[in-house]
Image (tube, rainbow, N blue to C red):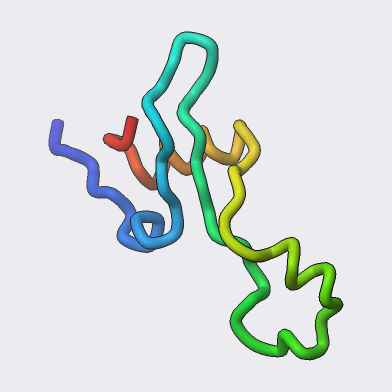
Length: 73
């Protein structure tokens, strides 16, 4: 069976931290959304909290690794 291709959009948006462990899957790190334009209309608290990156929920991370980044773990 041929190799699966990694989704090129997922390569740019997600990062896998660590390797898969016995007690659970590796973590998937993503950037925060809603920071590109129209930021002057949004509350300061929202903009402050959406700085940097965050860790996806476990089930979402599993789906990203399974469907978009098949050889990442």
